[in-house]
Length: 126
Image 1 (tube, rainbow, N blue to C red):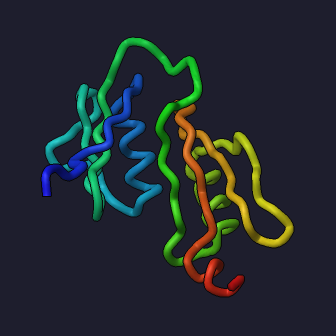
Image 2: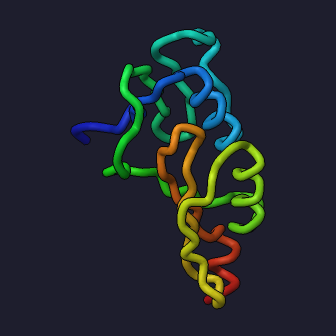
């Protein structure tokens, strides 16, 4: 093996606030070493960690890379409702009447991410 993804790094204007949002999304936590006002804040996950880096400029265009989330213990629609309650915004709804598709949401700083069907929903459909 040559390399592993250690972190997915996300530029933002408030590293701690955005990391806290994503820690809630992923049922994780902000690193014990990080505090409000820090320029770099880490959220550790089962895969690669999410590293939030504070930068002076705001987001201006669509992300070239984004996260796709698959709910583990709830349906896609239940997860979308939960994320909206945490402060996400629905940007594009690509859910289809047959249950396929996804929804594109934005985090509190406008970074896009998608929510797909859960594994249970995929299995039930096949």
